[in-house]
Every structure is written in structure tokens, then in C-alpha cells.
Length: 232
View (cartoon, one colour):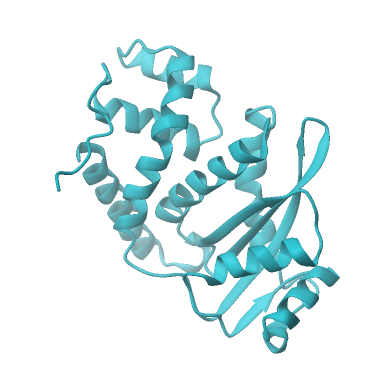
């Protein structure tokens, strides 16, 4: 079976489309900012075209990056937390799980912050990975109830300040949310966070725990893999 070419009927080249999507998802830039950046490089693209690209082709590029990943999330410790997100004036909850190195494991959006929502998110996160040795959460009762039902209550940890890893990880999303002037539906929120997590996993390195030379090598390897994706 031949491989589907998702970029076949677009006037712009796949390299320009992928680059525009990467700029928009990875950096806190507006659509018009990216339009100006591309214009400075001699590429005349409307900001609404970029909006269409990331909506239509963002999942395709994210999937390509995911295939290039060489390691699975850590089995040592996971950090789980939820953040409030306003959608049309109503509070929704974005549940996120990261490992101890900041790799995003999964995301989920719900209208409630109860046991049922926590259980659904945990099952979604554990669907493709084995349970870690420790799961760090805050003291929300929904986590305890959900982990108890999954027979994982013995690995829960709720000590103060121990969940700073995911609190810092939320900052990438918050900066992006501000530039986008918030989200208009649960579907668009979940879609964007799924795409953003793949870019974050690919380009993010824990520079504070790596020696400078090792960090530079990791960063360059990420750029090299991205260049492969860009011309694929």
C-alpha cells in the first residue's frame, strides 16, 4: 500500500507548511507574527492559511515526530496535575501527565474534576505504558479514589513541592493559551495540546541537569531529526 501524501494538493511546499506549523506550536507567536516572519524570508502567506495548516496538518507533523522518538517515558516517576481552562466563559480542566524528565505522557480535557474524570485520564495514560514506580499528585481526593480503583494507591505520593516538575511544565501551555486568546471548544483544546506535547517532547531538554556539551549534542540531534521530518 502506497504512503498517503497529505501535502499533495497544497500550493506551498511541505517544508514551508511544516516550518509554519512548528513556529506556531512550539513558540508563543501569533498567526500574524508568523506571517510577518515568513514575509521577511520572501514567503507571502496569509495568517488564515497558517491557521488552516495547523488545524489540518498539525496532527500529521506531530505523528511524524512521535515516530522519530527513540525512548519511552520514564518508568520511575510520573507527575500528574490539572489546570483550569476557560472555554466560552465556563471552567474546564486540562489533565496532564509528565515524567520526571519533563516528557509529556498524555493530556485529557474534561468538564468536571471528579473521580470519573481522573479515572478516565489515568486509564488513557496507562493504556500504552506500564505503571511507574511512583505517581506524584496534589491532595485532590479524585486522584486517590481513581488510583484506589486501579489498585495503584500504594504508589501515590502527595508531598508538598514534589509536584513542581509538572507545575513548570504547565507554563508552556499557559504562554500559548495567552497568545491564542483562549480556546473556543474542548476539541480544539485537546487537539492543540496533543500536537504541542509532541513538539515539546522532541525539542525540550533538561538543560539544568545536563553538562553544556551534552546538552548541545542533544539539541543538535533534535534539530537533525527535525530536518529529516522537514524534507520527508
